[in-house]
Image 1 (cartoon, rainbow, N blue to C red):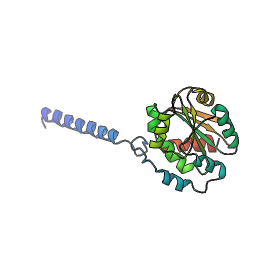
Image 2 (image 1 turned 180 degrees about the vertical axis):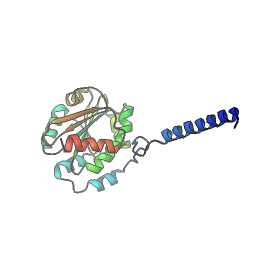
Image 3 (image 1 turned 60 degrees about the vertical axis):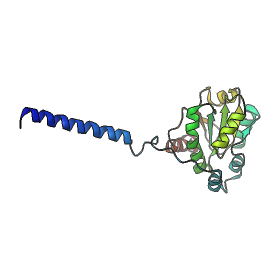
Length: 200
């Protein structure tokens, strides 16, 4: 075989290898939770999954998508009433794009685990109620959020004004872990719930 043919063959093989690697990277690995967003659930589907929940959790489900007032004191009272249950707080804002993308992840996890884990939202930093209420109507979840226009409740709970932030409380009511940034998928969020809230 001539030198020219050897060079052409080597070039062709290199090109095929580069293309193969690129296609694999584009496809993503099977465990990559960013490759496919979960399909949103309807309110009826969420209610069906959560039917028969224990009373403290059923009370949260009955306030699904509500924007509750009362400030930090109301949230503290709620957390005290949930002592003995793992609690996950999702701090979000309607103007926060990562929060919007993450909400379907919380919707799914709350529907999957909401019969044994309490979920609560904090709408932190929205200065008027109309936009977050519109947002919750368009992206329903199975739990209420506390309205926090000043951001003070969010800072008290998470030690930061950053959104999105997830805060995990164990059954003893102890804040066990704070995670800043959006969850990329349901599996990662559920693993952290099991580790920091349920098993914390």
